[in-house]
Image 1: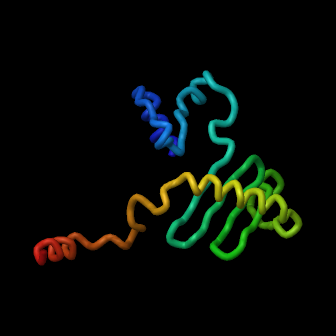
Image 2: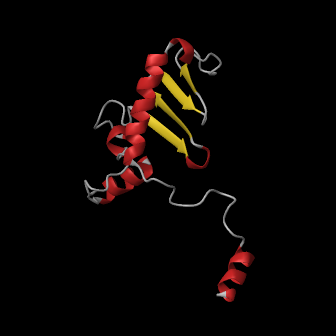
Image 3: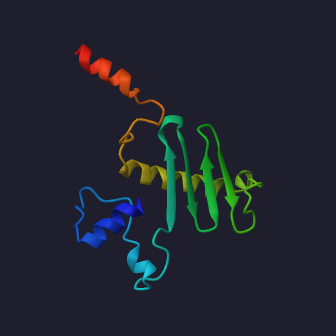
Length: 130
């Protein structure tokens, strides 16, 4: 959500510590004013299917709702070799890191999943019935 962080930063909008953003202002990085990685860890989650993923350095951890897989993106760009079975401790640490991040995020999506919204005609009929 760096888009929100970048917009807020460029407009000078202060962010409440009680409601932090999951994103940063990218302009200082793009302008060369700040060095390094603006997001050392990237997280994704798919609410409706209990799936999540994260990238930390060269490692990508993916959980498909039932089991996890771990890939080294430096040596396996195509993600064909799951190194998780021989790196169970790394996978457990990454899962814990995800759970800490996830606990700070909203417990449910702000919008319903795509394809579940009522069609405009159905919404109008429902409004008229009320």
